[in-house]
Image (cartoon, rainbow, N blue to C red; front, top):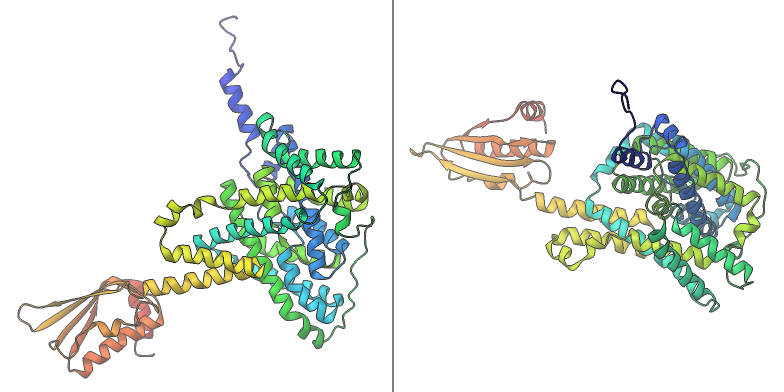
Length: 515
């Protein structure tokens, strides 16, 4: 090569590094990031294949949830298409799957049984408006107060629920189901050792379906879960009377749908954040869910939220990281229920059940239940996790279990911090004055017993209460400090409060003597 010509050919190591950087897209949720995927065949195929396997995992669960809610399966399927597609554009967490969910079905079912399906649409519309208001107010930031032990309990309970939901597909079935079950598990376990270019669950479902169809095996399939007639419905008619009585009927259900959906969606978003080591916009996710539910209500008929099991399939098994995967899932689901409903109906339920069982096992945080971990973990933390799991499994409602675990965590935290205040008494050498040094944050939980920490009848006339190692955070603390001053005054002592920082001094000065 001539000396004046620069060699621009990358070294083999550089080429491999470039290939790796293209394959491992870091989940930049921008138009540029998604354009990068569209220009990179390997990344694009990964996202599309992840969306395909997610679609197959969606179908039986959405149908079963429609039975719980008391609505036609096509209602839930069409609503899931609308939710998945709209959230692919509007949502704040890429790669998270949103569809007609079981938690929402559980909330809607009692109202449907009592008043009929005509009241589902107004309930969904009102729930969507509440979710939009929740997101617009920025209340999604409250999710930061959910403790880690509750999150672990949420994940473990999810794994239990997913696994338990698949067990009926293996009981009371023809014996041919069990070889197909074993074949599915075998493909899922062995294929990744050969290639990861195609998701193993997708290959397993295709192979097992082909075996069942070609061999003419009489085993339960998706078609047996509910009728799936091809074609699209029109807009959902508003059949409930537009009056205050309808509002009285629907508002409790609407609020439940709104907050159950928000809780499950935001917890799932946090779970995906942890799996992918990327952030998401929870506020945007909240109002976007409201908009998507309004759209799904008008064209479909029922509300939804994040589907945790299917999201795990998409993100962990399919390794999806972008909105392309969820858009693919929504569009493929639309194709299946319109043009390919007959093909979808031939998929053996055992193949889908085996895939979801693998998902369940991989979802559980096994490290959290190891004896060595439990031995080191504080008992209150373990108790919160157990209560969360127990609440979810007992009710079948993730939101109720999380609420129970969070309330217990708050109670246990308040019990612990009630004793974080330390008051040290320092008597002057001449006995003419006394100084109390208060250490720790003063708020409603810790300041309640502050009044009892002083020796009012024994102290000399000059008293100093030093709060340089403490801070005043609420009105309860101001009232407690005022009570201390009042008791010393009743005993003929003069009290000086010292050491307050600027914020605490302003807060105390504004409220002192007015409570």
